[in-house]
Amino acid sequence: MRRGRIAFWAGALALVLLGMGLAGAGKAALDHTNRTEFCISCHEMRENNHAEYRDTIHARNRTGVKAGCADCHVPHEFPDVLWRKVGAANDVWQHVMGRLETREQFEAHRLELARRVWARMKATDSRECRHCHDQAAMSAELQGRTAQRQHQKIGLEGRTCIDCHYGIAHHEPGQGAEPADALSAGTR
Image 1: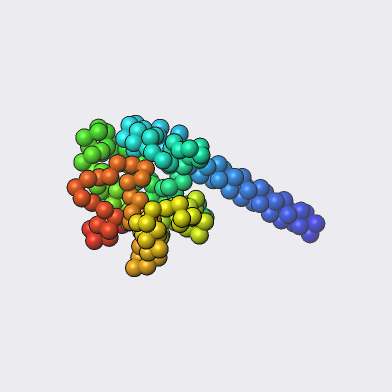
Image 2 (image 1 turned 120 degrees about the vertical axis):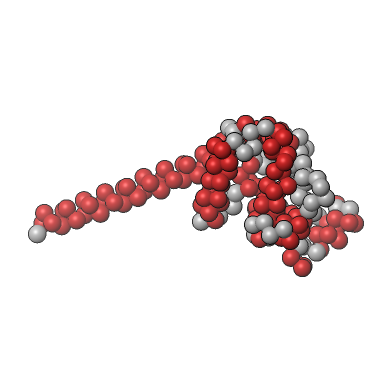
């Protein structure tokens, strides 16, 4: 009887330790893949998206606050971050298949890629933007009149940050595309 109890508790302890080890390894993997250095380890990201981002307000500004790739493209809450990582597996597949191997290929797919990001941001009410930017903390008196009017519309008729700020960290796709097009194009 005593041996059975010891075996039970030893097994339970082993399972707890295994679970903690797996959770720790998973957290370390999430943290590693959220680093900008990881994102730009593929030349497609380094030579296209990151090259554009380096001179934007999110990378260089008077305060020195810097947003990395994951700050804007990965949810900060669990388990949403896991779902985004599962979706990002498609990005890895596209890299392996060489779909965006050249600048020309990237430009040919820029609108499609932007529409996917815009649709995700619209669907989540720009939650990644709101992780750093708090509308209640904005000083309206420091904004221009147009910005004041537009910020008052946030939340009305489905308006969110990405509706106006869609070209803030990367070049706009051109072709007159805007985030509103993402929903009408049916891209998710």
